Image (tube, rainbow, N blue to C red; front, side, top):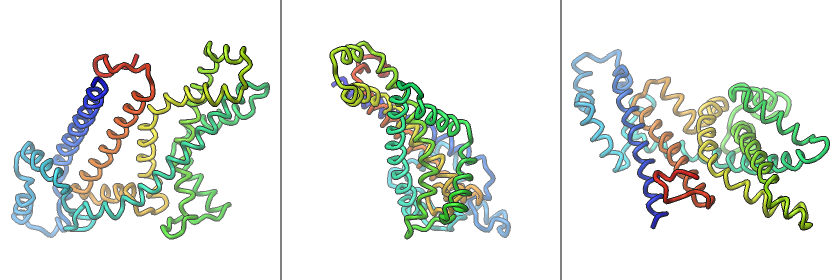
Length: 319
């Protein structure tokens, strides 16, 4: 029962956070110029503008607008586009764009997780050797990835990937080869992140008393690493799942524009440039929801995997 209360509390906190974010974005967009709600604003008279604003409910008090907006959200209605595709339902536009972003995002997250875990294990093992070559190589990779802005190394990946390796600069959904550079660009930051933290946790675990005892009893090093060190070190990595999801979401905004990928990331950039306020509002809502759900998922996974977390303590504070 305590576990159920903990989960419910976290879910309620997530929805409360999302509600606040949506309200803030809603109010901020209402302060923007009204041009973003019209496709031919320059040719419209003041009377026509006011009539159209009234039809859209934009002349009502903001609290009333928010109340009606959430009512429409519960029905799955995100509104219609005003500039990107005038009069077209936003939900249909997103239904066309989302599969592309989801496919690339899931593949990049899976690759980064596998690559990051392998690199982290190799770095931890190498740090116990005399020359520590793999550990030094991994450290350089992590430092460069974390220090250099993502926009810079994504451009370098595109430059050398197209110039030297001959990959296409433009994304083609029917040609999986054109997916390689975008996926690699999205994966590299998360892979470095996982490797860095897994190495740290594995080194922390390798200095525990129970590991020394296992070595003293003659347990093989492979079994110690696989059954004890890695098994216990990977549990805390669950808390970095939200970070990975958010890094992928943020990276997709740039990467999809860089490779002309017809996904959600490139769409958000386009509608911001077009000042399509309704679509900006809908996309920010979706990205916020993904981020909040990612945080919730990581927190719950961490709580269930790590027995040191107390469900009894107020607000689920971790001991």
